[in-house]
Length: 124
Image 1: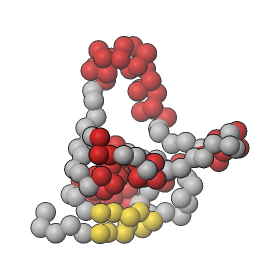
Image 2 (image 1 turned 180 degrees about the vertical axis):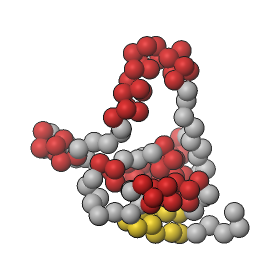
Image 3 (image 1 turned 90 degrees about the horizontal axis):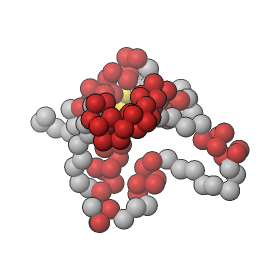
Image 4 (image 1 turned 90 degrees about the vertical axis):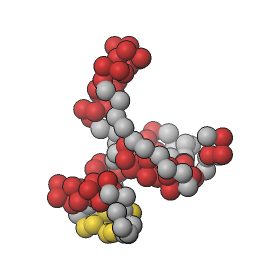
């Protein structure tokens, strides 16, 4: 890559826009996705690559994402651990923050990037 670009992708959570976002991120570009509803499950869902990009940006250090194969998870975490990962793969990693806030009004819920910025990353 000769130059890192900052790119805005409209429809970034849709089928075509999502593919464009993924391709740009894989090439190391900074991407902002525009979507009709930031509250949709797809708009709130973070991929492993999204988490790595946030951690890299917050810490100023490069991180790499790779998905651990299910057989390795099964060996290390047992059958129950493997079932948990399979469940997350099936249903996704999104959370209904509004429902959580209604059920637990005294708990402050925030996004991953806000949490990451509040951590002490010097211990890594």
